[in-house]
Image (cartoon, rainbow, N blue to C red; front, side, top):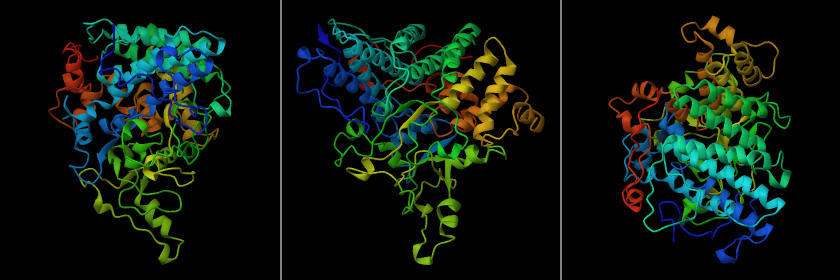
Amino acid sequence: MKKIKYIFILAVLIVAASCSDSFLDTDPVNKSTEDKFYQTDAQMFAALIAAYDPLQWGGIAASCVPFSEIRSDNMKTGGGGEGDQPDVQALETYTNNSVNSASDGIWKKNYTGIYRANLVINSEFESTVADIYKAEAKFLRAWYHFDILRTYGPCPVITETLFPEGQEFVREDRTVVNDLIISDLKAAIPMLEVKHDAANLGRITQAAAQALLGKVLLYKADWNNDDKATFDEAATYLQKVIDNPNYSLFTDYTLLFAANAENNSESIFEIQRTTKGGKSNWSNVDETTEGNFWAQFCGPRGYPGNDQIDGGWGFLLPQSDLMDYYLADDIARKTAVAWTYDELVTDYNADKPAEDHVEWAIGQYNQLDFEGYAQKKYSLWKAYDYVGGLALNRPGSERIIRLSDVYLMLAECNLRGTVNEAKAKMLINEVRKNHVYGGSTTFDGVDELIATYPSRFSTTLDVLWYERRVELAGEGDRWYDLVRSGRAPSVMGAIYSGVDWSKHIYMPIGLTEQGNSGNTLTEYPSEALPH
């Protein structure tokens, strides 16, 4: 027997780094050897924290949030020019390949997370508390596999930490991968906590597992010839989240991503970050930075900062195609997704003496990508206590699943499964009522949009696709929505012509990882495109 190769694991369990101000603060586990570990609740908890840790890994190309936005029609790479972060620029233009280092980030972090989750799940130690930890590890194993599946296509399913000599790792059929993900989530749900106390905010709950299971089933239905029964099954889990009294929609959308708005009433699954990690050096930065390192990439370039935010490096630039897509009434959501020159300069300077005025040197940007907007949802807010290097300890926990996403997914299930159009409209209208109209009882809902904009909306599903784009813009869903629904070649092909969509629907598995598998892993999957 031997340890699984580098393709899936970098090292034995040696890390239990803190990645929030509360539940992820714990002692390292490298003081104990692995064969003497997993014998107490405390050791199991330390192992669980190590399984959470890879959620934070990676820079701008390894988090699903910037990755999915850059890959889509919402945003472009930006930076100081086309030569700035060229590997990431290649992700945007679909010219990346298996020797592009940016192709490896999501693969590397997730398979490391899978290995660490398996150490917890496969431990023989049992206790009431350890059973909860194992359930959280099953959620993590499911999430890590799901993130790989939707990014790279069918992939190896890994449930063990030891393998015989000569073990071949191959792309499993999509059904096999989905079965593991669904099984893990269904097993985890009854064991997970309904709600955690303040010291454990960010740990996985029943609602997080129900919401992720609903999302996984929705993707499965979409890729399986729009299977109505699977949409219906997804709806049963999504409904449980909406019925959960621990969550509620904001009536001021602009506050959802404000400073110190992490883990709010809409947060279902959120990757925790801390501004107090203390890291000050740049060694092994992608794997040891507990702050939101990629957010530093995305602050306004050439901007000195103001009393609210700092300037950054100018990546992840919202495009006019997105900003012009918002309807006239959609002011709150449009305001929340991007900074404008007026906000940062004109309006900011209006009531200040000349000596306090700021300028925004927009000429420093990649002029092919800059269209007057800077990413706003993950801003470099000043209203935090910082410990360590500023760039390495930025705020902004990734909102992976929010409550409004659950509303919209459930609406989709009611349109594409057993049809209940009235309920779908009600769910979409509830999001619009709160996030567009601030909770007012008078608002334009689905029917009004279809009547007012007949050239844009002819069906409730048309409105649903609009809502998903503008509601979740800047949050990492757009590219994956385009792929699962079969719209990526038409939408993105209009921007980048000549792309080989038999390949670039997916990320390629890196050349090194192919070699580590004995070349049993193919660069791209062989399955046909959806729809």
